[in-house]
Image (cartoon, rainbow, N blue to C red; front, side, top):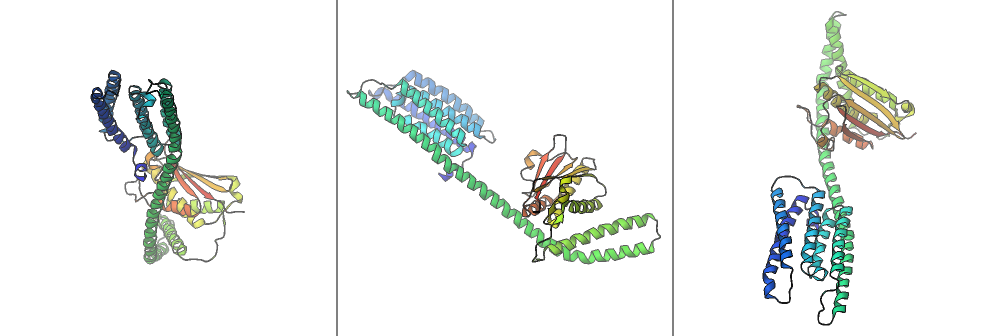
Length: 419
């Protein structure tokens, strides 16, 4: 049964396609053998007409299945409805509700319960039950059989009642098991994704720690050289301005390395909550020094004046990566605008960062921050993963959405510190 649950809709459609051909072959054999069996009475012309129509439809289905394409649950539902209709027409020509093959109605119901959502499975069961009931009302009183006509009518009614109960049980129990297996598969996929992301972050962390130790010496050397040049160069010269900018960038690099090395050392004490407004001011100010080519507008909700955060370092790292992505997206579209807004919703800080880029593709919104990918030519796809992991550790989340007016809106949600 587990193998059935894992069948894709397109594979199920292929199986149904071949089952129809097998059924058509069986019907033709029955028509050929009927004259030799005097006890079997068939509406041969009507049966052949129905078979020809089903064969033509199935041939068209086979042609469509040869094209490489994904199949949807709605398409599978349509095929099952077709099978219920075809089976009803065949049964109407071969004895109706008294036919020995009336239990074949359970096959599309079982497939629907295993592969379709609960509502669609109930729809298939209702259609099959309605078709069976229609045949029952039409063929409830067949020709007398050996004086036991009354007993046979009760037998047919018992078959109908058994079918109704069986159909309901199939939808309930098989549908429940299929739903449980689908939930388990989704959980396993999420766990695998989490494991891969953690492995990437662990590898990045190990390399970053080593790089931080190695970069300390050249950064100190460059800082000394810049200081000497600023002392020897006359004041109010263009070179002094360039050296001042270079000194700021070196200080930013040194600060980032100190934070990186400090994060790797256990403190053993809980971090002191910091003001949200102060933290945002420091993070955005530091980022503006890193990206002087970007014009960013910042809007902060006054309700955040009394709010605080638990971990400014992790939040700052995540937000800086998001801001850099927004800046790169805007610059790639010949714009230097980035809009930043911070609002408070109950006990959460909600930030929206709007860029002026071309906008993220709809297919990429689900995997952004979860799988390693990048829309930038020289990007490595690590920034969003690091941001996602940092925010997840804080109990927050990050999401990306294409803006109707153009660009991408990145939404960052972080829980605030309890007051």
